[in-house]
Image (cartoon, rainbow, N blue to C red; front, side):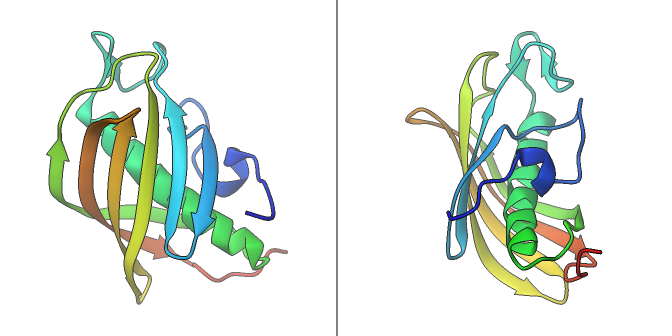
Length: 144
């Protein structure tokens, strides 16, 4: 990855809803992000990141990839919306303090809709996998 961006440059979300700490790599259709579960996170209950938080983390991981691509082309970071979550397999709710690593693979992009496969791990332990359809709004506007 030639250029490093602060995560807030890559995604439209702002605290306290930011669910990605770092964009760690990009290779063709695959990217990697990391996120450490903190006790003050809005999606934490009883010391664990809830299913909705894991899904939001995956969506923001996909958004970071899209934001990186757009900024690299001199375009704005687009807004995206979850259209569908499919084949969700949640193995465990991650505990506060765990560092999640999420791999996003773009399977298809057509007419502003991106289909991704996601896999989230904590160390060697599988946390979640799914496919997600994301609607990308204004995906090729040039930066002013």
